[in-house]
Image 1 (cartoon, rainbow, N blue to C red):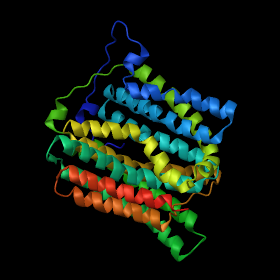
Image 2 (image 1 turned 45 degrees about the vertical axis):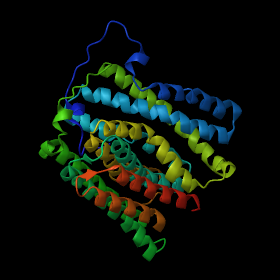
Image 3 (image 1 turned 90 degrees about the horizontal axis):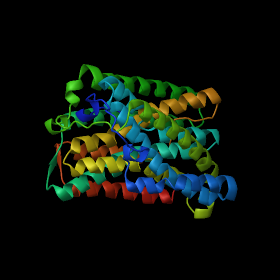
Image 4 (image 1 turned 135 degrees about the vertical axis):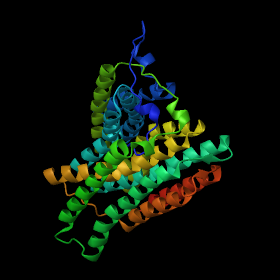
Amino acid sequence: MIPFIVGRKKLVKSYYSPPLKQTIIQKLRIGKVFYLFLLFVPLSLFSAVVLKNDTFTFITCILAIVPLARIMGYTTKEISLQSNPTVSGLLSATFGNAIELIIAIFALRAGLIQVVQASIIGSIIGNILLLVGLSIFAGGLRYKNQRFNNETIAVSSTMLIIVVAGLAIPSVYDFLKPHGPHIQVLSAAVAVVMTLIYLAGLFFSLRTHRDLFDASDEMKATHERPTMSKRLAAIILLLTVAVVAIESEFLVRAIETAAVTIGITQTFIGIVVIAIITNIAENSTAVHFALENKLDVSIEIGLSSAIQIALFVVPILMLVSSVFNFGFTLVFTPFEILAVMLAVLIVNYLSADGRCNWLEGAQLISVYAIIAIAFFFVA
């Protein structure tokens, strides 16, 4: 996620003091469930290389990505705890949605542009509606009413409106001039503008107006100490990225066959399956903060991740596509644009008063469910 509002505990520089004896598992505290899911990593590789069963490979690769996403998030946090605020913010911006980016690049190379576009939309609406909705719902069950800083959330809300504009304008142009000769240039130009406003947002939150994005006093008082050295965290992070790349390669190869066998469309795989799986770790983190009555952090995790997908990942995909001539553009279907517009509209409305309850979380989840069900029938 990009740090438009990052808890101070993430930006307070800390130092690692090694204990006498600790194993990697003791240092890498990702949770027992995620460790169990790591069993799907060798299983997916065995399926892809030996069994050559595309459907089984697809399912196991999807499940293998869940713990890998958690490990990437954890090691990124460990490095951030031992870095200054600027490095921490840039690190989060770089690796916040790395898995989505890696999968998308492999999918572009395989010519699955529809899957890439669907996964972009799925990640955006999933973070806005599902992640934020689950956080508000879970927190609301424990606390009758929860409050958050709507002034800082407003910055992200405005960015989301820019996201809608950036995704909608090329699509409208293509609707008015189908297969127009300038759509590739227009998409590239929009991607450049989106990158610039993304960088401006980083500079705004990390430099000129950093005080606006300080979390609450309770968060400031929380000093989390790293569990591993920066070097070890970096090594684990890089190794995890390499494994994610391998899993993504096998996953993309299996998508077409698996879609036919399971009976779902490639659009649904991108919109729902890939989007949910790659964000499970973020979802659990956001819900955890909400249960601790730190809803500011939970909401911003979702909104910032959605912003990063649109303003950082999409321009990178445009650059990769331009260099290797993959044919990727910012032309989305009307239904995909409508889904993003609805997501941005409802989250802006619900966050306007700076307070929420469990029902509002349920409302966000219900909108996501309606959109997901509809995409099940979209070819």
